[in-house]
Image (cartoon, rainbow, N blue to C red; front, side, top):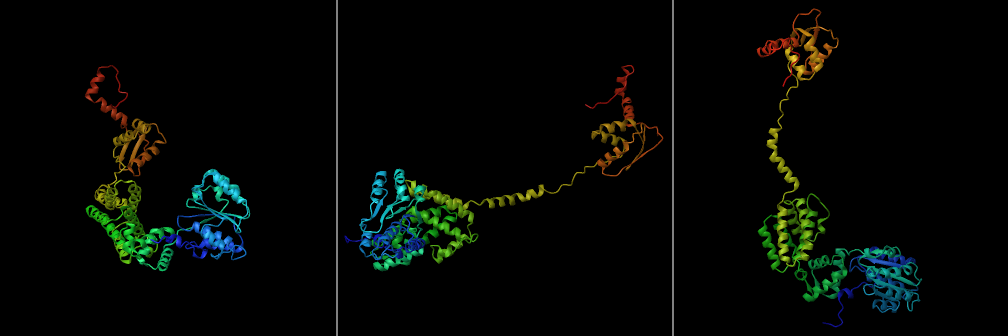
Length: 513
C-alpha cells in the first residue's frame, strides 16, 4: 500500500463554501454575513457526525484570514500562506482544541490567557473547540465571560454532536447553526463524482446502498466507499456492498416478509435459517425488516402517505409489496412494527442472536394471525345476532289496567291499592243500587261531597275508562260492603261457635295473617 495514501474522507474534505455539500442554509447565512461584515464573535455548529461541522469551522477560519483580499472573504483562495497553513492544521492563530482531552478548567484558563494577545500572522485568532459538550462544568463557567465579550481579534467556533449537554448560558452567547443530514440524492451525486475522480466503477445500485447506509453522514459514506474499493479493487457492485455490509438483498427481505405474514411458522423459520446460513447479519436483517414495515405502511392503500417512488425498492419489489398490502391490514403492520422495535435492544443484549431472532419470527407470525379488535367485535356480534334476535322480540305489553265489574271487586281494588281512607268510607257508608259497565248508582249515608270525585279518579286510573257516578236520594236499603262482610263472618260456623263462648261478643275488625 502507498505510504502516502489518504483516505477519501480526508482527501475530499470540503475546502471552501462552494464544496460544502448539503448545507445550503448554513452556507448562504455565513457567506452573506462575511460579505456584509456582520461577523459574530462566537458560533456553535451542531449535527450528527460527518455532516461538516469541523470542515465548516476551518473554512470560516480561512475566510477570516485569507490573504487574497484586504479583509474577510466568502471565497478564500486556498493557496495563500494562511489558507494552506489552516488546511494543514499548522496555522499559529487558528487553534483546534479537542474538548474530550482538554476538559478541565486549567486547560480552559490557558486558552483564555493566550486569547488576550493579538494574532501573529492572521487577522483573527480563531479557537475551534470540537466536541465542546465534553467540557466540564467548571471549564464552561470559565469560558462564559470571555465568550460573551471576547477581544475584537478573537473568534470562537464550537462544534458538538450533543447540543443538549451544552449549558444554555453558552448557547445564548453563540450564533447556533444546525447542520442537517445530507440528502440521499446529494450523497449519491457526491459519491459518483468521487468515483469518477478515483477512476473506479461504482454501480448505481451499489451507490444507493452506500448512500443509504451513510444515513446522512458524508464521512460515514466515504469510509464505506473506501472500504468497498479496497475490497473489490475498484469495481464496486451491489453484491460486493451487500456482502461488505452483511445485508440481505431487498428482494430477499420482501420475500421473507411475505412468508412471515402468511402465518406459516415453519416456512418463516426455514427462510430465516436460509438467510442466516448465507452469511447475513441478523441485526442488519432486523433493520431491513423495520425498513420494509415502514415502507409497506406508507404504501398501504388506507394511508396513501407520501411518494412511494422515494422508497429503496425496485418497481417489481414495490408491486409485490402492494400485493402483500391487499391481504394485510394496517393494524397488523403497526403491531409488527412494535414487535420489531422492541426486539432491537433484545438482539443487542442477546448472547445468541439466532435464538433471539427465531423467537422474534414466531412472535411476528402470531401477530399476523391475531385478528384486530374490530374484527373480534364484528365476529362476536355476528355470533350473538341470532339469539339476540329471539330474546329481543317485542313482548306484548302487559296491560296496567284492571277490570272492575262488581262492588266487591271495587272494594278489593281499593284495599289492594292501599286507598285506606277511600276504602274505609266506601265500605262503611255507600249502598250500591246499581253497578254496571261504567255506571254506578249509590246512596251515601253521610253525603260526602268529595267522595264521587275521588272515586271517579281512582276508577279511571285503574280501568282506563270513563265512569259515571250517580248519587240517589233514597236509600235502596242494601248493605254496605262492611255490613256484607260482617254478615258473612257471623254466618261462618266456626266464628259463630267462637262468639257463643263469650257473652255480648262482637266482631270489630278482620286482620289477615
